[in-house]
Length: 305
Image (cartoon, rainbow, N blue to C red; front, side):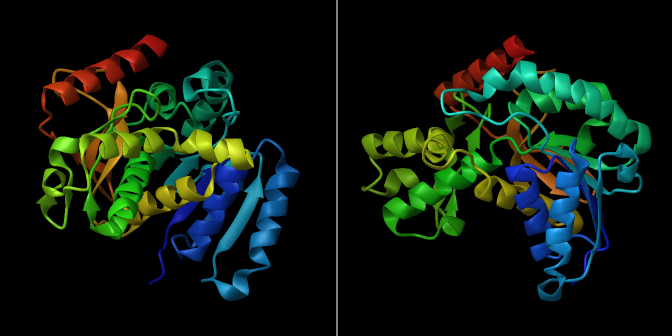
């Protein structure tokens, strides 16, 4: 089914270019806009993608460095910014990427006031908060990829441990997309059965699985220099929820208002996503330890704001 959506990708680095490729491969856009500081690089990606159009649903592809190109876009994906090096945490990127966002977000808002903006740039919780402030968009139309990827990783590692498809694993990572994230083991289940009933998943195994989940980006970066395949698939999964108006529940970074007593911070909680962006937040019950982890994560993000 053809999706009659105009989608812009801001930033044509590893994540942006891979996301653009997957958008076309999944037929999610009738028009794709690539915006990059180096307009020749954006043009190169556009040419490369156009030349493979025989193998995909046709779409108009435009490129450049002028933010006027976002006019009429339904969805704007922001991947622009410095990427994480081997010895950096996501929070180490704040200074570099804040300067970039202070420049580009008002430009986007100048030419488009009606799109849904999805922030991918790290540290994604901080950058989502700043995007809200700089754009003055409503809260439901600005959110970050947050722990959607962390959740996918956790489900993969849990499934791999039990030789079960990750699509049959229901578990969340919430909080910061970073070192203070935490798993919600109290609600984790496989095939409708709580994980506490699986003898293979004792505390030692669960701790190992979450440690690998939390360190997954560092593991990939140490071996190939950057992560981009899994995050681009995550972005496209969120786009599908929007373009198909599917009301899917995905943990993304969103602005909180008295969520477990927390307000004025962007952090990942389960959200219902449809054609309007975020239609509502799901208030998941957390046990004592999970609630303390959630509050700690919120405080870390607030401190960095």
